[in-house]
Image (cartoon, rainbow, N blue to C red; front, side, top):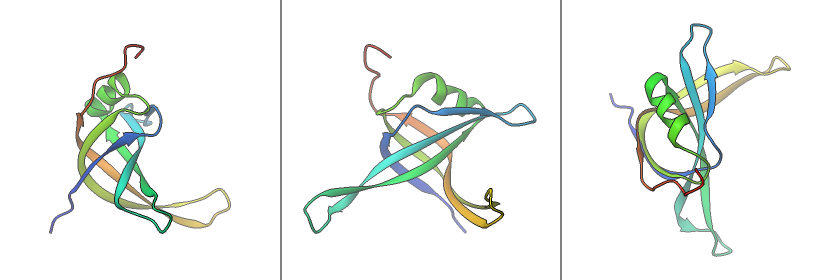
Length: 110
């Protein structure tokens, strides 16, 4: 069996840093990935995909990435379940990053 995802897109905001109760660093990011086709109005649409990075990879993403940066991500698709604040069971799909490649350079101000 295989679970492998490759994506290229731009970050919609700066990576969000969190710490687990055990002290591990986690970075959460949203990647905008353009679709290969246009809609009925001739406009290109995008998918917004949640990305999770752990430990050293998370630290590098937090330190070096920001909104608008172009990246390539290799990882695996993860579907998890959780209960929302109203007690309703929900599912979330996200990509757990194994490799993140920076495809552009930061702007002078970064």
